[in-house]
Image (tube, rainbow, N blue to C red):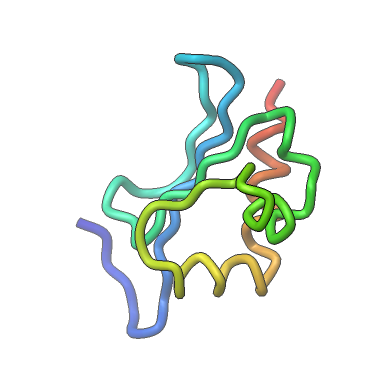
Length: 83
């Protein structure tokens, strides 16, 4: 189990490249799991969420926190640009 301070948000990011091919970052016991297809990863994550292209399971508050902070955009971009 991951340790976290009060107010910290644990997020697992999943960028899907194919049916059974995805890049994953973050703990299995995350507050929220964020999924997006690699073809949509270049879009702004907030916009992608509103368009239904970015899916999230778990705490909506945690999702909004990482969308506002820019953490989601940074991590999704990093995962989508895998070699």
